[in-house]
Each structure stands twice: as C-alpha cells, then as structure tokens.
Image (cartoon, rainbow, N blue to C red; front, side):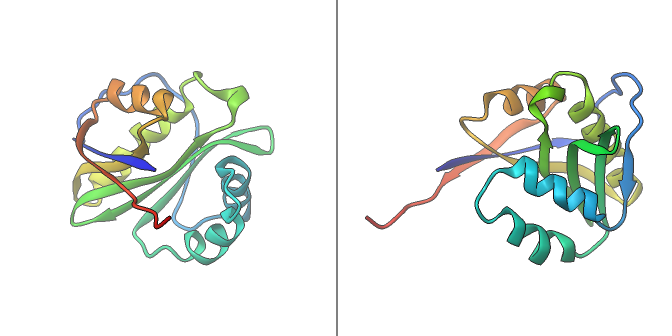
Length: 150
C-alpha cells in the first residue's frame, strides 16, 4: 500500500458557489456518511472511536442532496498548517464540484484559524482524487509505503 503526501499553500481560487455545511463537531449524519462512503471493514469503529473524538479546531464539511450527505471532508487546523482528511463523494455525485467546494471552504476555514498551508494524503492508485488535488494546486511532497511481514 503506497500513499502520497501532498501539500500546498492556501491560495486557490473559488470555483462557483455551492452551499455546504461546516460544523465544529461531527453530526451523526456526517459519521454515518463516512461509514457509507469509506468502504473499509473498520469504518464504523474509526467513525465512533476516532473521528467523533478528533480534537479541535476541526471543521466537518458536507454537501447534502435531500437528507443525505453526498460529499464530505474533514479539516483539522494546527498552528501554520491544516490537514485534510476523510474526503469522499458518492459515485453518483462525482464531477459536480462538491469536492472542490469542500476543499475551497475548508481552506478558507483553516486560513481563518492561522493555517496558511494545507496537506493531505492520497493513495497512489486513486487517480481521480489525485487529478482533483493537482487541479486545485496540491503537489507531491513525498511518498511512503507500508511493509507487511509475510
């Protein structure tokens, strides 16, 4: 499993208007969407034991379609930088600007808390996400991989 660590300065232009929700704490709806969109066998455990207890300042961002979260992300700010986590969009709602809007609003939120630089991790084989991140200005900082004992 190989991951790419990417980072960028906070300066990317907005791409249209899209209403989305920004909350300081995860709602049950946001956590349920994470479980549904993440697709790993331990997603429920991560949602309940890790994400629900993420120390702030944090922004839980979501785009809803009807009463369902269709796109989401988490931004956690620290002095000077912020991490972007849990980016996911339901397949039926991809390429409609919601992930770009989450990145833009999340970056503005982070900048208002003194975080002028953003970073994220993405799987090397997630080509669609890597194209999105490159399009909004992220660049590869470094890569790493896990070694598994046979």
